[in-house]
Image (tube, rainbow, N blue to C red; front, side, top):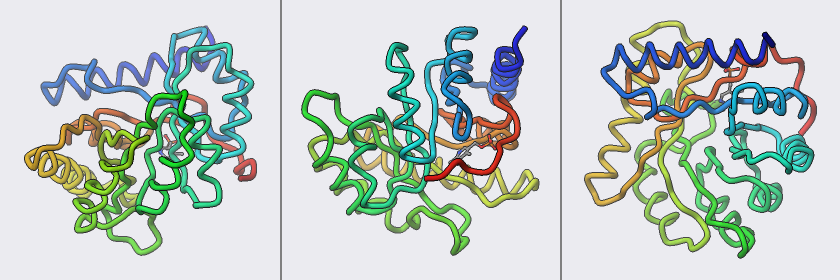
Length: 233
Ligand SMILES: *Cc1c(COP(=O)(O)O)cnc(C)c1O
């Protein structure tokens, strides 16, 4: 059995166990396979051996190249890397989702550049849940105004929130930071939004993310193995 196939099956099992432990339905959690730095052939193998359809990319050019090479497959592409305003056009033209919007200017450009023949771009607001100054993401206090402004943009559909917690193995810190993102989403929904996505959890912490309510885990290393240096942006 191929390594990618068995790795995806093992991650699926981790998701099922974490969901069961949290009393949640395993189908309520989508696995996003993070293929950054790995070749299009690895993505093709993941799809053909397991039916995995959702893939995440961090670097615009690398992602667009893979999307083109794999256009014969019914894949769903998620942009999950930092996004500068001069790189929004290829993202708006090629991806289905963007998880890392943390300011209005980026959202405005994505909406203006989203081609008419495509469905609205699906969006998450990235929130800096740890307060580390080095991290991207807006602060919790900025979320309501940004969500309201994004909702008014015609070619975007706001789906939810995304975070990368502080790198720590401390379970309670992770639960606290993931839980804060869930509470923020619930506050928005009480104000009338219908947001269904909490993009949180990676290879090392997907159990804590699922315990806190994650609906989308972004898993790279546990599927494709250790990454080499980034292949350029
Ligand atoms: C690389 C990356 C991941 C995957 O991380 P792993 O630890 O390899 O599972 C998830 N989310 C984001 C935003 C990433 O940049």
